[in-house]
Image 1 (cartoon, one colour):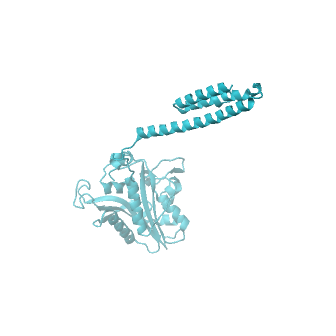
Image 2 (cartoon, helix red, strand yellow):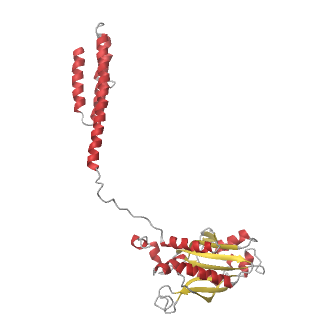
Image 3 (tube, one colour):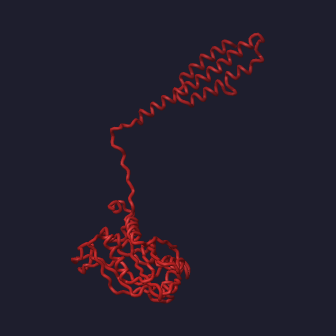
Length: 340
């Protein structure tokens, strides 16, 4: 039996030394040290050995068992170090090579313009207010002096979910909600940016676009305050040389109402194809809050007045960046978006 142990030791050492991967070492560990391994078989046969040889055979078998466990683990570490060295050699980096470039994200031009608009009006004392994009018909029309069957609804008809719920066609419902919450608190000075939805789709209109509306309600507010606010806005957004022009118009929720033009950003008012040689570009609508809207929201029009304005953010971005098709904002073309 002692000769068998010596032969087993020699054979095991040679096979462990010749192992080339961890899987082979696992197989050798099972072969020699497993439950049915050769060393285990020797230890289990101790009862059949001569009494005077049992201590020596048991000692030699256990020593060999411990020795083989150590050799297997030592060989495993050697293989792992060899594998790491080979992997490092294969994947070794040349630090003198230029790095791999990656694209850096940018803000979308609409986001940039919206943030700039917010900064301008916050600087003028306005607060940002938000409201639901899925809105009641009441807040979208009736509370804005646009009753059922009013022809002005055709200008702003939106996407109805039920007969009384729709995707909002403008952010004016936010103004009504804020006045309801604040009344009789004064002053009210808010801007309402957000998505709106209308059945429009061409080079200058989109079924979904972004709008920002402003509202100021207080005692003694006049049309002059509105004009001054919009003049400051135009110069902050488009440059100190900008002038504005107000033309009489009609909106159901303001009276009097006006369309607001700025001097053409392309020709600086000289006249060109963009402005149809007028020197002016239409940019937004505005006016004094209609007394009926104030009443509906809980204010007394005999005591307070207010002004409101609204503009499409895409329209501002198109003028600011010289974009001639609103659909370019939504094509997700990196070549277009990376310019801003």
